[in-house]
Image (cartoon, rainbow, N blue to C red; front, top):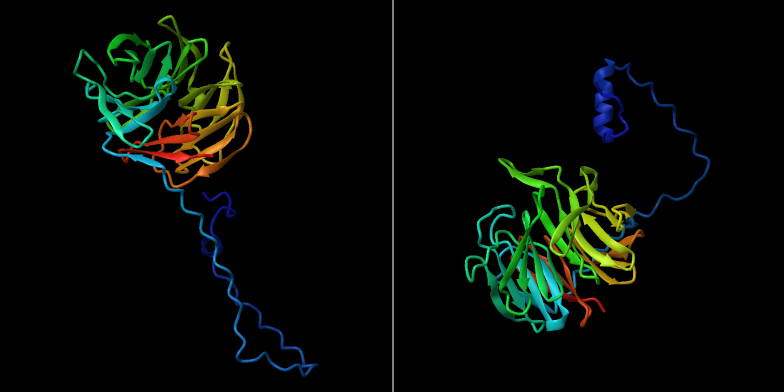
Amino acid sequence: MIRSLRNMSLPFALLLAASCGGEEPPPPAPPPPPPVTSAAPPPSASAAPVASAAPTPPPPPPAPVAKYTGLAAPESILYDADNDRYLVSNINGKPADKDNNGFISVLSPDGTVANLKWIEAGKNKVKLDAPKGLGIAKGVLYVADITVVRQFDLKTGAPKADIPIAGSTFLNDITTGPDGKVYVSDSGLKWGANGPEPSGTDAIYAIEKGKPKALIKGKELGGPNGLVVTDKGLVCVTFGSGEVFTVDDKGVKGNVSKPPQGTLDGVVSLGGDTILVSSWAASAIYKGTVGGSFESVLDGQKSPADIGYDTKRSRVLVPHLTEDFVDVYDLK
């Protein structure tokens, strides 16, 4: 049953109305034209209608200052300020497969790949399936890997310990606080016969002294993805609901806002309450404030995953997951 015609295109709505109402009577004859009362000359035959101006196309995205190729499904990039380098997690396969073939790359800010497989699954006792979010705390590199947070020595890359997250299905991003606390998101996904589907395990966990504890949990979180600690506290962006919100130390959600388009992945802090957020739906990087509005500052970004930020050079680091490369842009 059609309940309303207001949402249909006009021709289709009129056609439907006529077909449902039976045969229409012929329209009345038009009234005779009014008598001519003025002798105004007809318009010049040479006059032409004024063409409307064509819409202005959006400006092309700026050229990257550096591009790194040869990667394998790069999901997350992190600026290691103490060592002035970029660390990149490579899924190298499907994002939920426990295939032990992931690796971590080291990129130099000068545009070169310093070490493609600095940490490599299957070598030096490394276990790494589908690495995603990265975080650094107290000389340790933390890596989200499906249902486990793995720890590596930041200097040597040697494996240190694993922290299983009971009840998780799709650990995604990691961030760390100034106190050394580690946070990891579970996007609440599992892979079925037809691909990804909700698992209902949506959560954000806090890890202290190697012990994980759920900070906030529930399907209403909308697929938690990117995390970052700001002056406003812990900020989360969601892949499912397209929200940006904060979570306090008691697990209370607040300051909810939405960028123009969703499917949000990464988030980084620019200081204060200003953040950058990547959106797959918009193929863009948004800039905005926690609890406030957002606008695009970088368009034309296909599959922008967990972005990073080079604080020394004011550059945004964009891993293009489905394209197997990383772009770097100036944001000055």
